[in-house]
Length: 284
Image (cartoon, rainbow, N blue to C red; front, side):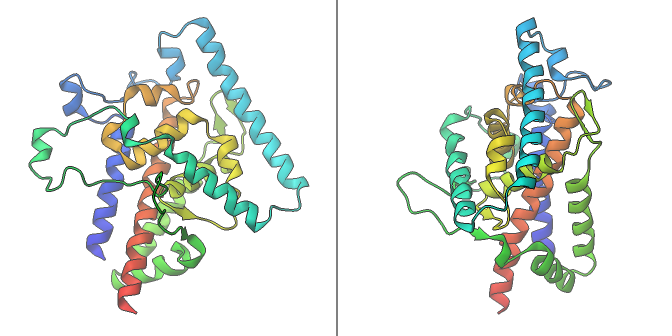
């Protein structure tokens, strides 16, 4: 279990490193690091890029559109009696299928550095889509059947004392982290947006929450953000500065780093759920 925790941590940490552009070796070779250009400031990428007046207006409109969608979703949740389980399942399958919009063939080719390649036994090993065209999809991981709170947490604490508590605190801190801001707006409840990002990461790894409406993901996460999330979570070495710059163009760099923290912890929890479920099955 200790090995599983270490492996999932470092695999997930790779997503954070590449997602934030902390990749000096590649950058020295004219590589693809997405490091924010202003290390001492926290201005928005839109203000630093050489985008024209129309581009700046478009980025500003994207922020306002997101705020409006969040407001409409919150109002609809208060008015609706609820969505049926069948509709919930359909919306999840739709999101899982749409995650195919980022396929390995769509990403820029990126060969591993020789200094890394010498430690790799199988260069072709990596993430495989849970919904593949023309193939039978593997079964969905229903989170209610093996939850972190009820199963994973207790198993780790039993086999690797105190670490379950530390991991749970780490997940909770990042999941609940907020300054209640969105770009230039303050006093905003971002819980809906954070939940959509967390659950979308789990979605691309085939994990479904029966009580979550995946229609929110489609409403809140624009296509460029979905591409970025899936690339960072599943193919981190193929993340580019262009991907980093294209989503949420009027948001601060700190807000984009916040997203990478969510990706880091959501990806680690997803990997732990699969690993710990396998350990549980082996022990029983």
